[in-house]
Length: 103
Image 1 (cartoon, rainbow, N blue to C red):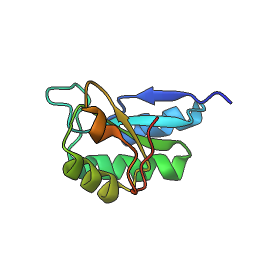
Image 2 (image 1 turned 180 degrees about the vertical axis):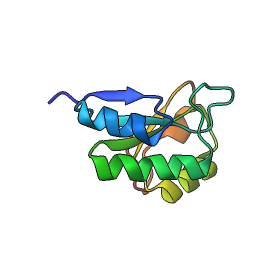
Image 3 (image 1 turned 90 degrees about the vertical axis):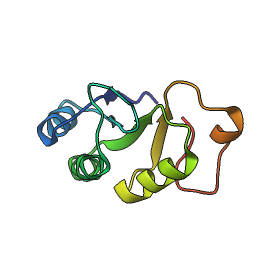
């Protein structure tokens, strides 16, 4: 099964357009310092809710290696998927008992 993920949405309109185009997943950037699509936690949560309502699963895309920060962001935004973009040490990226899964 092939899934399509678009990355870097920053507005509700973009998320809805991606859903209408058939996206399975929408990448939302958080803890990507200086990134053009960096989202503060409140906007991350809002866009994640828009994605779920429109169809695609939201994916947290991050450069952070702070497990506590990311666990809190995943919980606050109701996101099940995380893309560790960059380098996070192997022990950090081991599966945990939380809701997020490695992809």
